[in-house]
Image: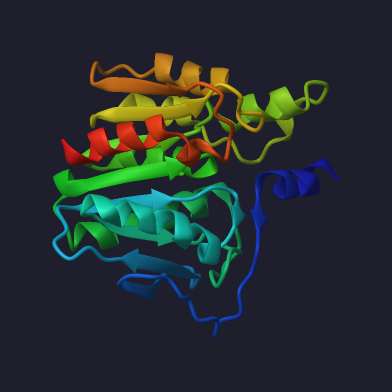
Length: 246
């Protein structure tokens, strides 16, 4: 029962029919990548007229691209193309999910992005669950910058806070050990976290920041920010603008 419930706790996907038509303002393209195991992974590429690079965006644990596209498209305003994928079981994406497969899928999208843009022009951005996936990608590849929004130290840290009486270290199939991945990241690292986050505690993000071994790191604390509302704070956008224009 606990093994089954952890999938429900970690992943909150919504599905889309394969003939669903995305509608967003601006120039974008829908595409699929295929994992060697046959899984079809749906993605969107939002296009800037004169892109100075790409933002490879890994979204949170709920919803699908019909929602996350509306969030990711805003980064085009900083003159980047934005590429965002749906994980297995989300939206139109297919395939049996596991931690290994999630990370392999993410690597596929890095390789796709790297065929279009040089590695130093790729910003890897991860939000919540996606922050761990983004950190893994940045740990295995050369990237221009890693930006993490509401990240956790590792998934066990989140689970133990939520279920303090259960032996989560033993139960969890998914580890998503951001604290280990981040040791190998050589690119500049930026973390955004709100002090009132009730989904991923602010202290979890702060602990992750503290174990980053490189000097080129910065944590933006959004006072009063919760898990899903940092984009409602002017200070968040001011910092994003600073990070994406310099």
